[in-house]
Length: 485
Image (cartoon, rainbow, N blue to C red; front, side, top):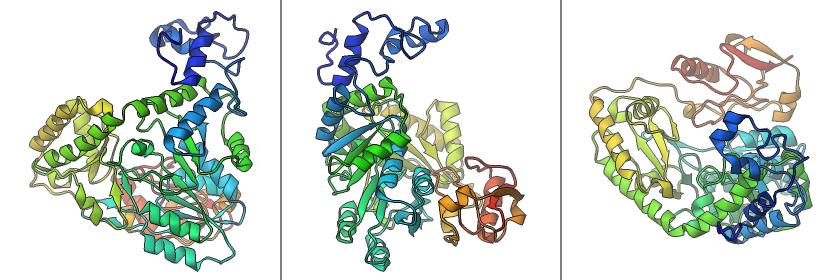
């Protein structure tokens, strides 16, 4: 069976397929018993093989908690392809890798240097580890409505100002949600000269390994750890990710992964990682075509009235050194609409779903699967431009990117575990936040646990809510504060 469907390059998937073909009688988890006990309509919708491969730690199928067989082989193949000394499969997204490294490489009272625009998982890592954040500022362009990247000179300044005896963990974002990357090679070199361990949140960059047309990979830049969301751009199932390590045998990483990963990991997710690596290897030429398509689409879309898809103009953003050509940004502000309105129109009128939208832009992710649908995308944006009047200008909208950095009075962990109360916003002025407020998109925190709530933040939240904005955990008109602050 394995040979018939060509699974020689995917050892984990091959083992699952082999097991499914042996006709074993199941008296083990999961409860659907390889489909025999599945809900009929559910079974019909998904098909039999999904249930056949949804297995557990059985003879010949290895164990993610202590891999020594086919999982170990699949991870080793991933490490060899991506250039790591050791790679771990993650079944809780790149988040699991980020949390594990922060637990292993940091701890209570230690400092973690990070961009303020980091993903919320990094801030959750601060809560779990008890570390103290040292924020790196990131500038933005009001013309494009885009955040830049960490500037190397600012990183150097922050690191040299730290206590010489401290060896903090440095977390860098490569690329950001818009596909923008900084001078990662120089920044990693600078950090290592200061004795720092470097973790790179490369959640959106698993495909960079395919071609020099994409930004340098975190491992090529010398990072100690890189967490990649293989489901974001590659073909893995949602929630499947990699953690790549520059050195192998780190027991603390293994211990930390056991804390943040399920003891019953999905074999479907793990097999999809095995397949995603294999597919990536086989489709490197297609990924080069994707990069070229990205440049072509930028040019064609920018010729449409009221639309602008920046390419080399992105290098004008502070700290931007490279960009991902497969991450297509389209600025719609000259159409007199927001990115949210553009995304809604493309969805309702052209059945085009974008990855995200903000006040000024829509963002689309290209992949080899996009090569046949480029004309439909051009048609969609052409129709959007024709449907909008470029004479109408956007009203003034709230923008978090001009807010000052709040004063930190408690660590995120101290604030998270403190007694809290819910109060109206107007009663929160001067108090200490007990929650993370991160308006989406792009999910950049305006307030972290342990920070003082000032008037500018409250004014922004009022304006953002009036404009229809929201954030995870939003409680209309109420905010969580530390009791006694």
